[in-house]
Length: 70
Image (cartoon, one colour):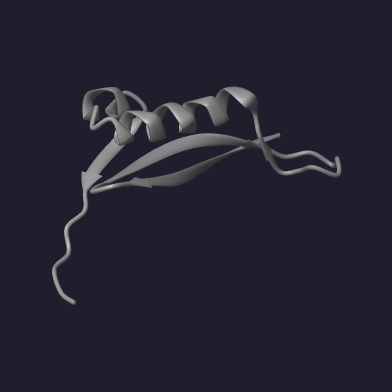
């Protein structure tokens, strides 16, 4: 069974909101992320590190984070 989950990837001044599928099973490693979903998260993280917002936005929403107090 698969379940949709939203992950937040934070790099520098950006946060990406990415939906991935989590695999549910009765096995000892459950729940787990498939290799394809893990590669998607890695691709977004790398794109944000390179300030390639367009590439990261292919996978989900990208936000710019700014300090407002403190």
